[in-house]
Length: 455
Ligand SMILES: *Cc1c(COP(=O)(O)O)cnc(C)c1O
Image (cartoon, rainbow, N blue to C red; front, side, top):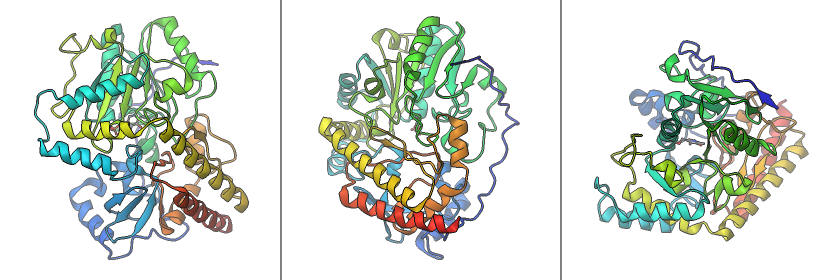
């Protein structure tokens, strides 16, 4: 299948204001009136827009008041009122080892005692870069940033610099951070708010961004610098690449001399040692990482062959920088996490994720609630629909049918925290043991019966 290249239709005036989410159907969030979370939220909304520093956290699409986290440990977060939740947010991916893993805490403490940032290179940066390179076949050099957004933004600039071309192709529902040219049709929080992109992004900024449907190989031409893709889409719920999609992208890029960029900010070091490139046996030209490689501290990275990376300043003419890039606390945390991620860790994680997948599937089936629980290795999703979505249109039809918010609040009341939005993946950590998975499945069975009775 091919689709013609069409310019994006996003204009800065076409994005509408997010609407206030309707109240939830079944029950309220466990945030108690007058409790510490509610009091903090009342204060937060006066000094922070929406009370949050990243929109998804605001509970807009599920309704209710967000719980404020006081502390977290392993599979659990504790809210400001001392309530404990089994956590499947896990910071949206970074906490693959579970919260406050002793090895990570120790690494960060030891690093902090030696100073928190210098503006000069450090041993930790070299060690982390070497560790990433050792795991990713074909990646020879990388540069560290402070976020996945910066990594993707810089990788696109690099691809444009190296190819001397302007156009970039992305897929609807894939998220590559919130930089201007990549935010269009961005999935995650953008989708959750019903936005096509963002106000404040000029037509000029997206004029060279082409949006194609996921799982369809776009027809490329020699104006395309780079094709950006989440090799497993994990920001429109979880949507797996269909067999041949990634290889098809590789071939299409090779045909016109475009670069292929795998945004592995979620899949990297979560799917397996070598990430999606190893999992699917398709090698991109450029990789982006984030989340897991920072162990919960602010990190991103992008990498490629030595030849491509040599275009970057100070070796080449593509400029990219960062005061806190390669921060010593972040590299220490990232290294500590990667050290925990051997083949056995991935096997244990996959087995936990598989149990959860089976348990959830059975719970919804038993209650007669239409649901699919897609899984790619250690990555899990959940859609309340009959068949697994394959692109953004089918994913958003499933995400916006109102069932997720019922599930979300039913689970939260039972002490299980899923992401407050239907477009996020389910993040299981190495700290989720059988007992947490069993408790989650039991709560899902009760919630599913409630949802069925409510229909
Ligand atoms: C989270 C994410 C990003 C952005 O990373 P930030 O650290 O939030 O800026 C980019 N790409 C993908 C695939 C992501 O999931």
